[in-house]
Image (tube, rainbow, N blue to C red):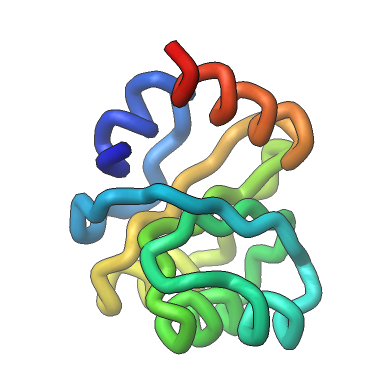
Length: 109
C-alpha cells in the first residue's frame, strides 16, 4: 500500500512528507540495533523512539516511513532530518499493537 493511502486509511498525523513508497511489510521495535538488523527495505517502522538517531537508522535500513506511536511527538531535529532524507515521519495515538491490528484490517478490506 502506498504511504499516502496508509495515512488516509489509518488517519495518521503527518510530521513531514517524503517519497510515497509502496509499503508491504512493517517492523515494530524500539531498540535501534535490532531495527538495523531486522527491518527490511521500504518497510513501515512502528516505534516510540523520537530522537534524531531514528533518522539515521531509517536511512540505513531505507525505511519507507516511520510511525511514532502512543502520541509521541518528534523532536525538531528528528523532524528536520527525516525531511532532509525524504522519509515520511508519521504519528498516531495508538499503541504499536493497536496500530498493527488496524494495518492488518485495512490490508484485508
